[in-house]
Length: 153
Image (cartoon, rainbow, N blue to C red; front, side, top):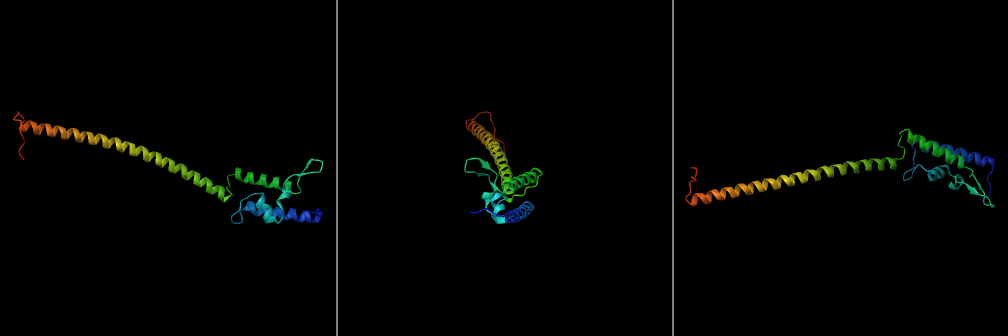
C-alpha cells in the first residue's frame, strides 16, 4: 500500500470526523457497535490507520488517524460519564441485568413464602392429626362405658 497525499489524508480525516459525529449522535448502522471498526467502515478508511505502527528499526510511531481514535474514545467516554447510554446493546445488557436481579429477588421471596407455607401446612396437619386422635380416644371412652356422655345430635 502506498503513501497517501496530504489532500487524501485531509479528506479521510474529514470523513472520519463526520462519521464520528454521526456515531456519537446515535446514527448507528444495524448490527454494529460504537467502536473503531464501525467508525472506520462508516468513514470508508481501513481501521489499521487508527493504531500505532512500527518502523523497520522496531520503534513505534503513531498511526495516521490515531489521534482521531483517541478523540473518539474520549468523546464516547464523556457521553457515557454524562449518563447518556448511547450503545443500544449496552442499554439492553443493563436492562436485562436489572431484570435478572428483579427475578432473583422474586424467586427468593417465593422460596421464602413456599417454605413458610410448607411449615404452616405441617403445623395444620399435625393439629388435625392430634384432634383426630383426641376424637378417636373420646369415642373409645364412650364405647367403654366411662363417665363421658355423648352430646345429642
